[in-house]
Image (cartoon, rainbow, N blue to C red; front, side):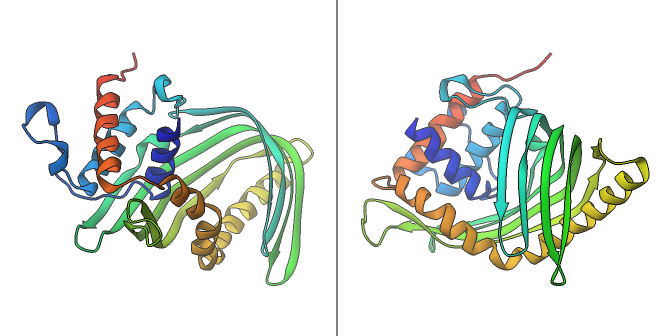
Amino acid sequence: MKNYILVTLVATALCLQGAQTAAVNLEDSNASISTISFGTALKMYYTAFQKIMPCGFPPLKIPVLAPFSMDYYSFNLTNGYYKINGNVSNMVVTGLNNFRVLAGNFNATTNRTSFDLIFPAVQALGEYEMDAMAYLAGFPAQMAGKGLLNVEIVDFRMVGEFALTPSSENPNSLSVSDFNLHFYVGNVINNNWNTLWDISFNNFVNKFGSELTLMWAQQIQVQVDDIYAQLLLPNINGMLNDVSMSKLIEFFVSQSMEFDMANCTLD
């Protein structure tokens, strides 16, 4: 279970970086794991992981992710720009497995990785109850209600870089540092339906919500690195304790082979 959490956090939080373009097939070559770089191993992992997303992977308790479904989820999100609380139920999310790595580079000398990752379209369907307030130009705007959720995010793109180096506190451990991330949203298409409103007001709120989300995506950019550093990096680096680069590469490669052998196919 620790290995699953480790790889999920590292591979996902590091945004499935592109690394090298050449794939490695251990079954068709005499190459040993010791000859495989971190970049190649991670590419092997996310490529194999993408293939099993429609099926999940029970041995590691990975659920079906394409589509991803959730019976119920409550949330309470607050920062200086907005406050949102409520819940969603019977949620289905499609498009998570259609990500593409547009560019990536792993520098074996500096152990720095850069990446450019895009999700062409991610759609969420479900039911919701929500109470939200956001500050626009210093003025509060509030929205509340319940109904049907239908949101599509188009061209969600993440661009960034990070360093994965031996820890200064423990040379036998790895540490993620100097993580810089920017994300971009091409468009947000809201077709939600609030049962408390009429057609005209639903249309107005859907359009306003799309514009608000795009504005929020721009405003929060300055906080992304700090949020990541405070909420995720401590946990990731804690799990990398006593994990060397060779151990991490070995796990990526062996787990990739297990994913490939799962032969995820849907009728």
